Image 1 (cartoon, helix red, strand yellow):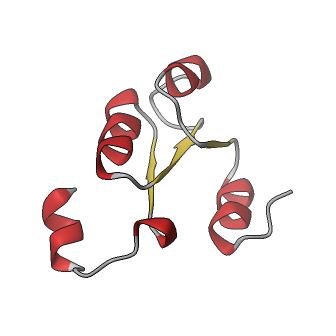
Image 2 (cartoon, rainbow, N blue to C red):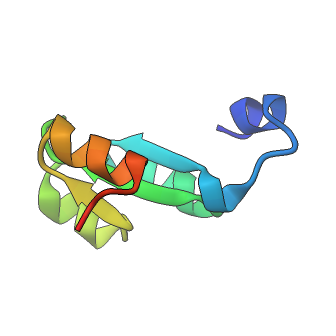
Image 3 (cartoon, helix red, strand yellow):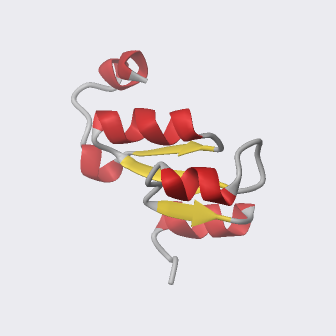
Length: 73
């Protein structure tokens, strides 16, 4: 992730999110100071994503899209 963000430098952490389905995805995003979104349709469980502190959880692609576009409730 550091390499990808470095390629985007300068980037705005407030406008950057990491989307993943496992705890290490959430950990990486938190380490980089970006918003983390755990998707529950992947390999990890809802509990795993919550335990590692995902900022948001998305149960469907529509939920993810709403989060990314800023129209989530």
